[in-house]
Image (cartoon, helix red, strand yellow):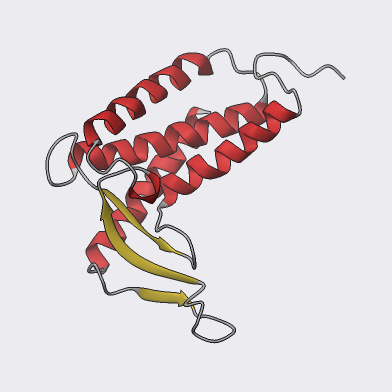
Length: 161
């Protein structure tokens, strides 16, 4: 679990730093153009924005609260991790931990100030919010954990063959 979290944090930091260095807000770079006309827009583009809030820019004035929540969630996952046996739960929680820490680092160390920093988002697909590697990790992990929960898989129980 810790290895997944570290991998996510490293990928998130590297991609954000590259994008901040290469892009200016409002000047997107198209990676995959639209296939069927321009009405949809590019399938994938890099478009730098700085998000003071959570997903979809919700809670833009609550950066301190979002930072506190990320710290609490990270500490809880870290504390719980020592008892997790199920590999899928470990992968899911590790990716959530990595994503939470990746965005928390932005909130702590990026402008405008400590615990008020704006998260760097840069991946844009049609009809969706602009996001980053940390956001992807959290979103995909939430789906994995939801599936594990629906299947009744206990994170603390060994699989019986």
